[in-house]
Image 1 (cartoon, rainbow, N blue to C red):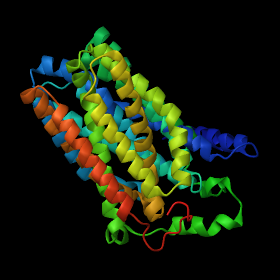
Image 2: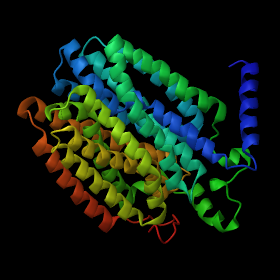
Image 3: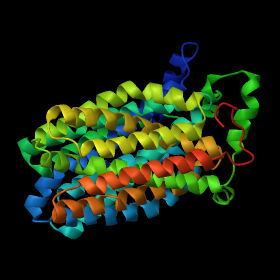
Length: 434
């Protein structure tokens, strides 16, 4: 980058910090930037793919099971790369890492739109899942977690509004673009939108840590919070985290939650079609979920800041189980709307948990590395969970039994978490959270 361009960018960043001084904590600007990055992850999210499944299946003459298989394999490959992305976050910082990811995500959209066969499609899936659903979400959560401690749950819930906006906008936008231009050009348009909404805010407004501009976490200068913040800054290493039961319980939570939310996002349009809804109506249910998520997010964030974390996780798993059961009852627009509302609450919990759990239990010194491995389990879940549902659609022509069975499994895991999950030694947390 030319020196004059760097000077302009640095001047804008400096003025942004100066304009916030004495008025509000700059961490809230970071939350807004991270929310925009989350919004930009839409092309890598299952709710966007859901709108493209039938057009791609028709155009490339590929069955739903093969598409789900391509999606699963690609997502699994993406999962295996996430630990390396976590190390990049620790080494280069979230701002630089997210800038690179944003640039590549736009390229991946264009690549996917040109898919001509099964292998090309699977490769495109891998790129979009790794860069969008994996790296962008992980980097955004990492960035906010560096700026907040006491109010982390609330800050992450506000950040999650970017995900809600993506859920509200990307599916109907994609449906409109498909109708106007076809599914291939639709992906090119989504790629250009991603470059605009993700790269510009990160370039001009983001800083990796509050210490970089002379601030503290939460914008606090109260000495009473220093010990806790130092505990989080130091944290524990990935090796230490992997030696605890807590790490594997959280991996189980994320494997389950990410996998089963992905099932609903990926197959929502198809399942609701079987329930008698037209595709454009089924896509509009994402908007209802997004609005619900926007309303629920601040409440969920405050819940995580004020009650025992294991109880909040248990509630999240049970709400997702209700969503899995509710979609099997859809036979009209009103019942679909009820499901969409429950699913919106599910996503509010998921997005708060995504960034909250790892720094809450292991600190932030090695957050990227720990997050990368933990998120890998989540993406593996997202890769495997759609397979039985895709099989049920193609062979059984019904997803009811599979979805209801998965809901029962999720409730059982919630009970395990409530009973067994505890904070590892060396991480200080308020008594009300433990």
